[in-house]
Image (cartoon, rainbow, N blue to C red; front, side, top):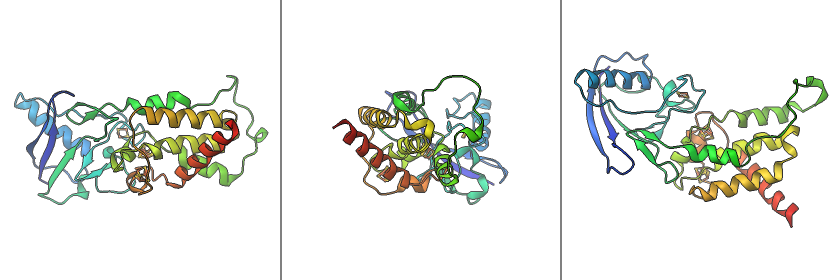
Length: 248
Ligand code: SF4
Ligand code: SF4
Ligand code: FES
């Protein structure tokens, strides 16, 4: 397969940045999107040109490091996959593909397609954890939890912190990310002890870091590679209201 790539190039956060056009030919339809970029970078290095910078780690849809805005969609035109899982067979032979970084005030561009997503880590540091004594794992039957609760909590726990929800949201809101973390922990007994403080601190930190507000358009749910549902945002809102009532 042959592709024309329009890729956002930006030397640093201060640089204005621009699209550059490249041609990549003879790409296998089984190639992942990142492997296709590897081929492009090999071509650029052979010509003593600067390779395109992009983030990645596991390349298995686990770590949440990869994240590109491809033809106007976070993680491209396949549903329920990360950029590293996206295959070139999802594109048409000869297609022009536009590749951009996540665009959100809270995710400043570092270089080319790499953005600084440490704002998500700061939200986690504000409360996305539980406190417990560090001993051996207790027997499973000492803490009975219904299957329905476990399933919903584990659906939320699938969030890999990629930031696609922020990139998809017209308000650059991190509500789906925060909701996934809050909903996961608040549903389980281990997370209930600090639930009220957690939701208050995480929402406060999200606001401080420059993410927008949620206006319920659900673009985040449509683009989330782990298909996390906006129902978790409703859970976050309920947890937040209940926490504020406790305080009153
Ligand atoms: S909620 Fe989905 S899109 Fe948002 S950070 Fe988590 S996995 Fe990524
Ligand atoms: S529901 Fe819509 S407005 Fe709310 S965070 Fe998701 S994309 Fe943004
Ligand atoms: S590189 Fe880890 S999820 Fe894509």
